Length: 503
Image (cartoon, rainbow, N blue to C red):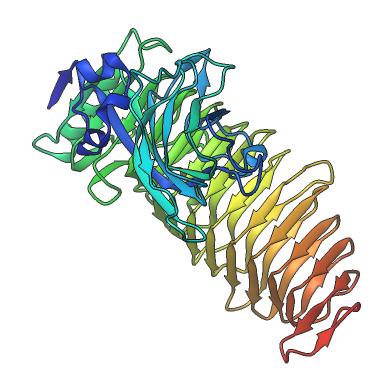
């Protein structure tokens, strides 16, 4: 079942402050709301200082750049930015916190390309005088339009009458599509898959100025051996990771996947499953070979016999973000949770990767042929089984990798070699992370180049750190020696402290 809709209902959250949305959107009610984990955009305690009375400041909210100069997240907040000069986001849902005002006042908040008019601009929030208290803090959450022109910033905030500190976080965003196509399940999973493929094929005028949304209702959509090749400026949105399942058979080539993503598009709120099979050489649920591609709230699963190689998400020269994803791989000869090949710069946030019982080698993350992961944050990787197992593996001295932050790598093998992080690139920083490897031979970190580790736990029976070039500070080393490393303020599994040596 396929239905075309020229508009999509605005969710109830928009009623919080409808006057803050663009006039066209108010009239058409054609926006879709997307939640994101609360993320700091601006904090005057960290940058800029308190607003002076009646001062206006312009802030960036969308895009993948750093907001550190605004006092916000150094990695951006995952809000889609501009594509070919056209904004992909109409509005954002903001939480604005006012702290320590010097008196009563109010806040105006508008799109950066909109003028503030004291007579006509509605207030985003009001706040009272401290009334003798040393300080007060009040907050309000609501949608706010963002500038539709690039290069002028995204929003303006004015603190009227009194001085105050302001903290701004974003919790979601609104997109408007030229057309929404609703796809429902058919009589069989195969019929559902055909309906989904036909809906995508029917789109011929997709462009930056006319993006599409294919909204997929709950059900199993079986593609058989056909790949779903996404199109630029066409987003696919399911009804939940356990409710909407797109599945397909394996193939004889790792360049063929169940879903092949496209540039300037997003895949979200669904599951992609490769059913594999004894005659199939490779099972790849999701392939991304494009730029400006985002994946959010997606589960990928693959399983197969020892004749089959499993690739959860395969990236080739990919730029974009992969947020809130789950990859489950079981069996097969070779298991690779997320693989990056080429010189793309994917960002991975809040992933959960599980790879079990590979007959040969199992990887949580694999970067090869120039592959890089500039950011891995708030991610959990569990690799169990296979004669050789890696949580993170990157080869080649010319390759680079950015940071692993707030993440956990648990790697084990019943027999063989287990390594939490194997790195041969030119630069890697690890912070607030746990790297644990167990097996007959096990390494926390095995490196041949520079790795900086802060405030982390590293465990490996054979060696906590093997190779040279590691600098470790404020961390726990549990197990074998850390040969070739430089340590500052570390302790071992018995909590014996070493100020300037490695245990």
